Figure 1 (tube, rainbow, N blue to C red):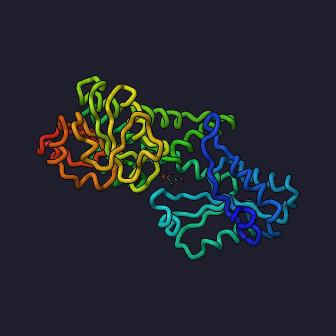
Figure 2: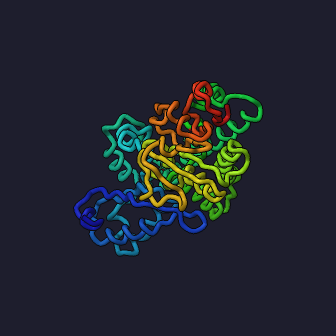
Figure 3: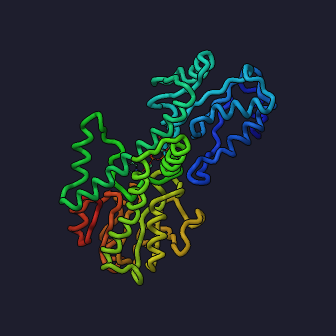
Length: 362
Ligand code: UGA
């Protein structure tokens, strides 16, 4: 119905617009700015503008400034930051069963009104200043990204010292200070959030005069992880990709989503194509309509993807890949080699079937 129509009679107005990666890694706030300008003339006195978009520190203050510039008296409209922590593919459940609700607002009366919206949820509600709420969102995603890069490095180390990263992660995870989650090695973190938010936090901290040391390494490890997977595939086919055929299983940035934005699978696919491999991919939901990688052929079933292939690569942890008929897979392949970049398959079972199998860190 248009933002202004939606906001006209509302007591609470949620801003849930995208904040894509802009120049130099900064979040592009143009959608936030446009929608605030659009709703400013129609906002009801006493209403609250609540920012749910992932926005840098200082954005609540920016919204207040834009409203003031549009002639809205500061005392008539409240502004709060209320970041979301929803995972793609699990958003409804994460919304209904959040681990916490964060409300960033200097005015206690407005903070209480916003927290009332979440009263029925059994979850801690944390009221902070706006800047802290905004940073909680970025720091949380950056920490998750750090965990993924950390376990990817440990997996690489496991290969060097003959350890098994699954055992290492399990043994670490029993310590509640560490926990089990986000300790699955893979081709790197992707999607529309973690890579963008890490870049934005690096950019914003530079602007604020603080030089973050850890996060640039987290981003570097992530990029190198794509290359490491390509290296494994290259090694599996004897050192040269040109003239070989690779079958890829999975293109989305993780399972149970149709999102291919910043997908590590596409980074791997484009490198394989660039090195002259003939690459065919299958994904349960992503198709060529997603405008994937030039030169990458997307087919409609997993067996077709590995027909006459020299190597097949698991890039997304879709459950259906576990249950394929692997006797048929090895039959249709030219040579039975698997690079399992998600540690999805059972190495012993694969080797028994005659595959040369490589996982990550085991
Ligand atoms: C992420 C956060 O998890 C949400 O809390 C946050 O609300 C959201 O970003 C957002 O900012 O909107 P999402 O982008 O859906 O959610 O993806 P994740 O489930 O966090 O996975 C991110 C990437 O890390 C994926 O590529 C995934 O495959 C990878 N990953 C995750 C691993 O490689 N290993 C793991 O152990 C976990």
